[in-house]
Image 1 (cartoon, one colour):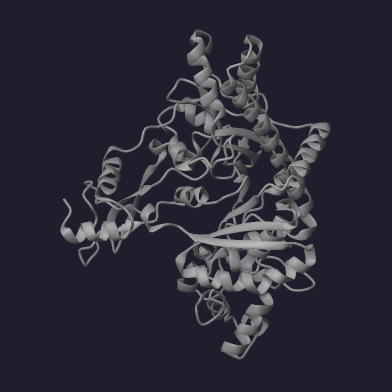
Image 2 (cartoon, rainbow, N blue to C red):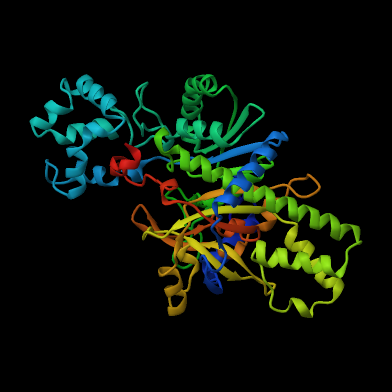
Length: 505
């Protein structure tokens, strides 16, 4: 199937022929759907800590930080912001010249409210000899949009989302990258240091480094801390081969194999390289201005406090199991912890022999742990919290995407559409074991949870393989805890007009 040139191409990417053949097999065979028990809810698996419990968890987190543990804020920031401007790109090529759709009208009606408005006005004057107001008055709307999106202007259509101006302040507008640096100072610092890691695309790496270098000292002075900022790129070895509709390898016009990015699930490799005791994960575009950071900070502290509290208990139980000096009552206590606190249940647990039971409990406790904030479902497209049956017969909490659910099963579809909560990607992770060593996170990926999508290149149809997503299949075998957080902590920017919402003004 593969020529010598193909093999050289595959190996140059850090992959192997065996891996690529396996990917083609996955594309041909497809992926099994998950077996669902129910959507997670307030009654089943979603914690709602009361005020007293919240205070306790905040104290636990502050105590943990004071012990000098390494805390890292991990921000997936790869890729261009082009999807944010899809409607404006469409306007540029439309056969009309004035705002016609509701989206276009809203954009121009409030254009002065965007944090980038001043820069855009300056660029319009430089390139067109007139500012935004004058261009709009003469119906030259497309010149304004071109100066926003295209390389001769601000180039926002090609820049990473993390480096666009999102929020206005008296001392100047800020990018999401800056807002994440500030968040790190507020809840992810330890002993006067804050570690922040951005995953960026290769094309944007140098620009990201440059912008961070420009802003870092400002926020170090403001918060009296030192930032340790690092970067990584999605590894070429995690790209997946594309296939023709018949399952054979798709080839470019020059005859080479086509590889495509495997989705955000590839970032489990980047996360695996992070050396941190606790790692916060949050998307680059989910940031708010300072006036709304209070709730974000409060609930990040609560989530982290829950994580370290449960981790400490799990570590104690693992050491007890290792010692062999446990009583029947202590084994019962560990079972209750696994079932009630970690919400992992096995119907036949009472049938296990003593040695088998101890091994089962040890295995369930000795794995990475994450606490996930979830918000009340407001009709957002995307994944949610569920109870899922695992290969060993146990049932545990998982984040699912719609692609993992059998649409021909009406019960499953109803669970998904009527689920009470949504996953905003608000994770706090513990990636070290009870002996202080790092877990190999790649061992906890469920490789059966990828999916195949239909795409095209140069007018030719192709099948693309997406790896198990970072917060669903890639973390499938982690211990997962869901905690309800307020909707105000979830403010993604999917389109440029989202920046006009009150939460971003």
